[in-house]
Length: 324
Ligand code: NAP
Figure (tube, rainbow, N blue to C red):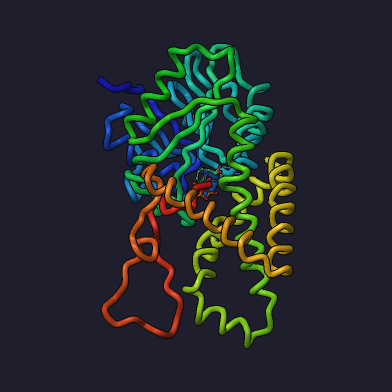
């Protein structure tokens, strides 16, 4: 029998919080789901969607008596949220989160965690570019990785409970050190987003005539960057502010490799370019064979019988790669 919590408190009820609420409800992982968020209208939206059992703007009230508390706000809000809830956390509770960076989260939360509460930071590597309570869906975590970064002081029984919780929602779970997580995610997620923001930003600065050509012919590659560059600005601001060292380290390597590519192009070095593109193709194949992406033509995008030539089509791709 899988794990069951008496009271699950979700602080923040956007894409990730609402997906946890729906998946936990479907799998019967909590007797009561308490939901708290900052804005009254967001709380009302969550209530209308029936995401939980208790709704409150007071985060301290939501966590009272909860044996599992998960912070699902942008990372930049953690300190103020933690100050509001710390004294109401129940002894024996697990305090977790879903933030896309982990060392910063440990630095901010650990000093405020009361005795008897187990801090187990987490990061589900699953997402879309959509935000808010209505963006969530119960299958978001199915087949996707969730990384947990417990400190050495946390009892393994508590870690096991949280591992079972995520596994019951369909995730594969791995534990690792927070700093290692940040280095891995810098190159697999944060740098790709930076590149996408940069390339789409460059287009935004082009003169209008060229811009309209780019949009018209976007299916040739640019479109895939625009989906990533449409990700939530506040969340991504926080990621680059809080994972600065790992991002800069990986950006240094990226820049060196870009210079090498630039040189190959300038020198007309066909063999070097072909060797590089053959290596990158192999990485793509290994991601598909690991079940982390679709091998379908055009990345599985649905196509109508008669294509509409006027505007670019942006489709929602569940777990399609915009994993913060
Ligand atoms: P989201 O859809 O924008 O939802 C964020 C939620 O946090 C909203 O309910 C918002 O409510 C609330 N919130 C924002 N600022 C707050 C504050 N200062 N105090 C209290 N509540 C606040 O975001 P999300 O995509 O679910 O992301 C949430 C977390 O998941 C982030 O830490 C992100 O790093 C992580 N994550 C995201 C993805 C992804 O692809 N999106 C993937 C993995 C992990 P109000 O409307 O009431 O402000």
